[in-house]
Image (cartoon, rainbow, N blue to C red; front, side, top):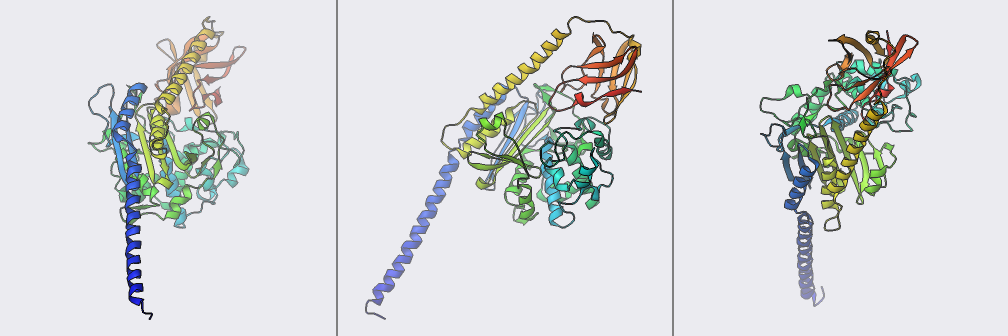
Amino acid sequence: MPENSGIFILYLTFSRYMRFTYLLLLAVVFVLFVFQTKAQVNYQELNQYITKAKIDFGAAGLAVGVVKDGDVIFQNGYGYEDAEEGGNKITTYSNFAIASVSKSFTAMAISNLANEGKLNLNDKVIKHLPYFKLNDPVITNLLTVEDLLCHRSGLSTFDGDLLWYGSNYTPKEILLRIANRPLEQEFRASYGYQNIMFIAAAQIIEVVTGKTWAEYIHNTFLKPLGMIETFTSPKDFKPNTRVAYPHINSKKIPSLNYDNAWGAVGLNTTITDMTIWMRFLLNGGYFQDNRYMEDVAVAETFLPRNYLKLGGLDKLLNVNFKAYGLGWFMMDYQGKKVIHHGGGLPGYITQIAMVPEEKLGVIIMSNDGTMLPYAVLYKILDEFLIGKGKKEDWAAKFLEFEKKKKEAAENYQTKLNEKFEKKAANTLSIISFAGTYEDEMYGKADIYLEKKKLVLKLLPSNLVFTSELIPWYKNGFKIKFKDPFLPEGLVNFDIEGDKIKGFTIDLPNPDFHFHKLYFKKS
């Protein structure tokens, strides 16, 4: 050893000390940086922003939850569970129907079963559901489980939704009837958002596991994760369940049961429980020191399968790509990959988004039909992804969209009234229109006299689709179904000479395709 070895050893010791001190300093700086980054979000200001936006939109109520780095860092409720009666305010334990956000549970269940080797995403649907058919026999034989979950069946967006909405059809009856709906899009080369195909996925889960979709979701996710206030049916609500009732324009509307559409919709839950679901997903199937799913099974659902065209809103958001995986949309936003989905039913709107790179999750649930949840979602994303940079006032933007949407609906109704303000007498007697009619896909309808007035009743969904037929113009009648979600419409009779062949329904709305139905008279 050289003469100066002592000095050399002292130097090494000092160097190690300095390196440790340097690393410790770096760690402290990093922690401070993270703290400062989180501190950029002023939660008091965020709370005030949401409160004002809720008032501006005139919404009944909403609940908001934010997850960051495995923790729930913000959650709050706004407005009322029943806006007409007041009373209970929305809390983080108020229960909302989350509609199509239920699809993420269905897709995760299928991915889990595939990871366990109990099915394959490439399995043909008819392997598990031999009775299943689409309008094209070739596509029927090619359709896979994966196709069901990424909206590339060839069916158009929302095709067949009238089969389950408010109807008495069972899931199997729904799947048998969809075979009568012609395919309007190219199989696997186009995108058509589909609820019926997710109902089929739920039936596959039942066949493979011997448990209903509800039982499997409860046993695999809800119970193990402690999501004790999440229900697969409103029939399962407990006596003390806090229900956020559905509203339209702050007016309470009747609640419907959607148990026949399990897989596509069906879940009722709270902000508290949904923050658990986001933490579980963002952590790759791991929650509170326990692994409930393999991370590869979770990641499988986040892989793009079906790339989508960009629309006007995407351009406003500066989105460059948009796709659908398995039960999830994905896009880029503020330079980050965002996994997201929406859910809508009459009186309910839900928005959920996760930014895996930031370990960030946001959930907004509203018991009204406004665009408020979209505004709140992008406000919160900007708070975390932009920081102190210039931010858009999304509440103002979406409020503008909301007003334009209402104006368009009002203009349509005005033009409808103007078009037929000069009423012409029917060519046939009122009693001639009575009888039984049937659409090949949807089913039967009855028209009958009640207290000298004609009444139309679509039999599978008579609780929502019943209306007086008000003479409006030559062989045409005005209708307003019981469902408060739908506007007024027209029934147009197809008449040759003195013979009624059938009728069509002109009721424009983005959700249900009445115009594709033709009710032929028996």
